Each structure stands twice: as C-alpha cells, then as structure tokens.
Length: 166
Length: 115
Image 1 (cartoon, rainbow over the protein chains, first blue to last red):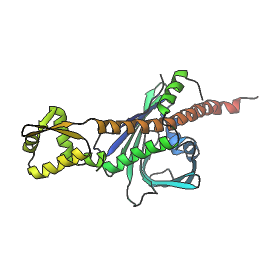
Image 2: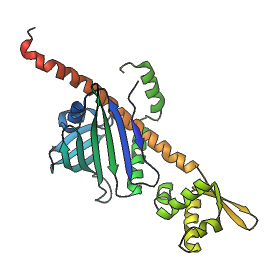
Image 3: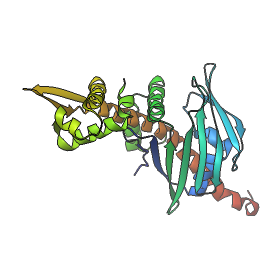
Image 4: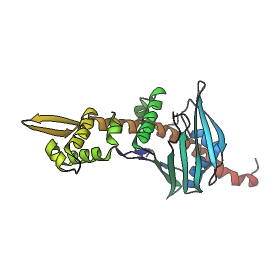
C-alpha cells in the first residue's frame, strides 16, 4: 500500500499537522532532515534551485536556505531548538519575504519507529495566528497551481496504481 | 472579510458550532446564548453572513440562521492541495531513502569485498 501524506488543519486553529510513513528506519529519515547535502535533494518544488546558506544542525544553531526561480529568490530561516537524533527535531521557521518580520512558525517533527524497517513522521507547525496558518496553506496551493500541478491528485493516483518509478 | 479571518474570532466560532449542533437557530436564540449584547452578536452574525459562512431566512418576524458549508469545503480543498504538494516532496524523500538504504547496506561490506 502506498504511503500517503495526511495534512490536518482544523478551521479557526493556529496549528497544522503533517503525517507521513516511510519504508525506511527513522534513523535514515532523521538524517535526510538534518544533513544539508541530503536535505537539498528532496525539499522544495522541483523547478526551484535550492541553496543552503547556513546550516548548523545543533541545539541553538541556525539555518538559512534560498529557493530560486527565474532570478526570484525566496529565503527561509530559523533556529534549531532541539536536535534529538533520531526521534525529535524542534525548530523555528520564518519566510524572509513577507512585508513584516516576526511571523515565526514553531515546528516539531517526531520520528516514530514502526518496526520492520518502517517509520512515521508527525510534524506539528504552530503559527502566530489563524491567518498566518491559512496563508501558508493557501500559498502551498498557489505553488501547486503555478507549477501546473492542479491535476496532481489524478496524476498521483495513476502513479500509485501503476506503482512504477517515473 | 475572508472566510479565514471570519473564522479566527472565538465568538463567531462558537456561533458556528452551535448552529452546526442545532441545524438552525433564530437570531433571538443565538443572542440568548451569549453574555455579550445583542448588537455585538449581531455584528458577528453580519461578518458570518458576509463571509457566506451562514445564510439567513426570514420566517414571519424571525430571522433563522443556517450553516453554509461551501466556504468550509474551500478550506478542505486548500488543505488537500497543500497535502498534494507535500506528498510530491515526500516522494522525492522516498527515492532518496531507497538510495540511502542501499548505501547503508553496501558500505560495511566494502572492506571485505573485492571486485
């Protein structure tokens, strides 16, 4: 059965959950989240070039990375609050492109061992306001649409049913 | 005011929860459930009407409020699309993890293997 991403965002609340299972032990998933050389390989949209400007994956260490498309740059930055391999990662996250500073997101990712070489991540993002959260969800949609992935659902379905690598 | 701003206010969420539990309510019944003055609640109802989160029917002297589910569906659609974008990211991670598993399986063998 294919692994599927679950996103939960209750109306009127400031939090968002992302849950996903992987056919790999949590040690590997944790590494893919914390090793910059691995991180650039999977995070962000396909058509954007991702550059890591700073990456200090220790408690109190900070990070900054930039996505670039057609000369437009989108930077994100934050501080790692807790780095507990291979089970928990807590950090702040801010988009450096908003009209005002201070819209910080507190992210907690738990890496759960499911046994049999499988694992699950449970990510919680806590936003400063409902508007911040919904804006983020909407920009996710916009990104999907601008990339031409508006028919993504059906595409993913056919990919899953074929179960063949693209 | 958009759906999300309208939903962000606790009194308005309480109104929606009560409407959802009761099916429909008269304006008078809604006022009765709050300590705030009827004009204050009336303002909230106005916001909810403008955000199309509720609709109202006039029945004799009464104004009857109903939940309008459409804007809620819009949020659900956004969440679904957001999940799809995340899913694409995670599918890249799936592939990377497969590669990492192979590397991890091969690496300890290297000192003992001769090709």
